[in-house]
Length: 81
Image 1 (cartoon, rainbow, N blue to C red):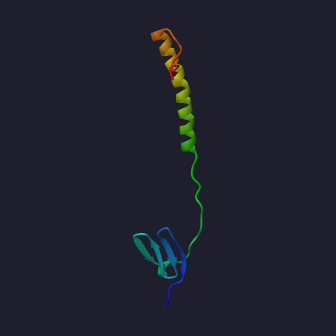
Image 2 (image 1 turned 60 degrees about the vertical axis):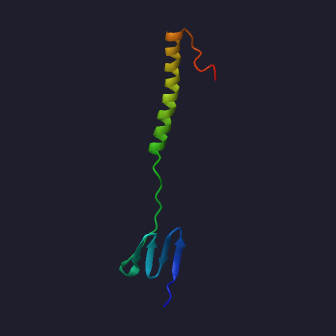
């Protein structure tokens, strides 16, 4: 009897007899149910990193200008660029 292939993409295959995930193969005889779900990525980490980076850039620039005024008597930090 030939296996019916339900899905075969990027190293993952599902037939009526087997589930193949690249290096491993599982028998479908013990599978009683399946479900489809979609997991959305959490955005807190990336957004917090962006905000912290922007704040560091802004306040870091202000600190560099303050150091330049104290050390060199000028506030033209980065003017040679």
